[in-house]
Image (cartoon, rainbow, N blue to C red; front, side):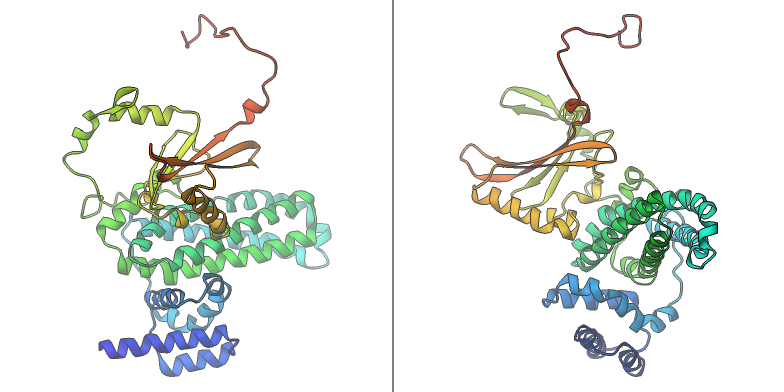
Length: 409
């Protein structure tokens, strides 16, 4: 296909989407698409949406109508051959998780079916018992989404493809919220709400599987190279796997970015600080032994460090290093992040703090503006701490209460 033909094809695709956003008839636009353009790939749809975002169409609008986009292009997407990923490759693992998720969605739908008819009331106790472990298993999708958000999306952003992270992350958050609604309805025992919320979130999950398989994964394979995939692979273990383990020991054809022969020498490097001298190893041990999670963003809003503590409160993976901090937060948090950084940069604020309750823990989150000796802004430090135990302290403790015969001696 000539470059002029490709350009014309892309403009046709963009025109169809623009008409959709103006309220055009879906079936009519499907026919128009079938007459004018055939064989569109997932990568072309993603590239088209990226261009529309770059031209000023809000990501929220793309998110709102992305299901309609898929409906318009579905026939063409179905014609695309199934991709064969190498076992152990990040895409093979993500696709295998999707196959398990499809089975889980089918089983959950089966358990929900009796609740939609009149006999549902009589079957409620038995179906509720069936649903509880299925709903709990659905929450494992968090690991799948975190691998996309922290490992895959940063690499796509480096290639100029920010659309998937901005649009899909927002949908991830919708699914997360609706899964919680589903579990809450099940805990409360409201049969009608369980049926309604369950049906809704299962469809959202199924739609996301389709978009990944038909659009995100083929596009990613098309634009990322072996070095990029090595970096995607790098943080998988830290996030974990949903329902399955990798099927093979895939090895990239190129070393991960930043790995060189000088890596060992760096470990011996000693850093002269204001009040002492530490080796690189000692600095790393110090930062990972603190009872807090730390992330550092430089003056250009780029994530340059996080402490890989054993029990991190909020997951981080190597994929966030070098990523703009604005892309490391879900879209709904972007305004808050932007406001904090702007206040730090103009000097009107030095600290921002929040506290939340999460999974039975009380989490204290603080952001600090980092300034050099001349007061120039050099970045922001995020510090998160589980203070559940600290809040519960009473009275005083002045004596060591270790067992002298125990392992602590």
